[in-house]
Length: 348
Image (cartoon, rainbow, N blue to C red; front, side):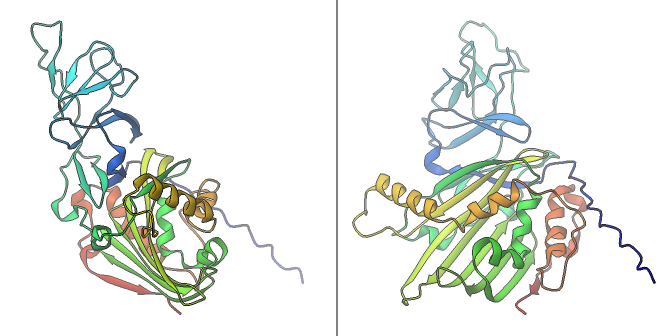
């Protein structure tokens, strides 16, 4: 008797139609100075700079509504807490209001550009994005991380990569227990659990890797910022630790900038030498073939998939996606059930 042919599975792929809402990390604090910096996020161009007077980081739409020049273009500069357009020297304050035109007697009332909410925490800079124009949600402010505040750590070193995919594909990693072996060399996982609570999503993992025994905690605060603490016991019994960041900022509906951050304990002899510490971190990153660079190789070639075929050895991918979906709908459409703490233990 002939066996009926099995039809091949059809992958479904429908991308979100709007950007997610939340705080997005845009870099280390020392990366933002009084030299205007151009950032291409959320389908437009932005200018970031640190005010000379306030010392605070400001973020504005970059295109000057006078004649369309980019406020982060060559020749732009900061004067006080304002950024000066390189084309006609119109001055834009941190609130987005034009406060000076050198050759005009009167500033047009409609001379205003968008000013974006910014905060600094954990030696990092964040911007708030809400497709509905809402102000930052107080309870979703990025909290201080106690380990970052400790002495004896290097500065953050940030690597940036352009990825042609939707950012949701990166978020899946939090629930993807099965990828740790093939991608990261952590084949023997002794504990793996996910915790969902409001805008936070936590991954707890313990296991054995090529490096030694790993105890790991990774935590998302909203859709774009994840901080990761890892303690490693080497085969010779020596204990070490590191911190990393896995972050994304959408650049378009089918693209995002991936920001990978790294921080290590300062090696003996490098105390007080910031440049040497940064060089040390860069050398550690370049050695880490099994780290986030390995994830990057997957993300850049994979397809977005709405209907993955999952098996009993996978993590709670569906639950994670339900959590992430709250940032893709208006605030009044977020299910109340997501505020409740839920634990998904996939250790077995």
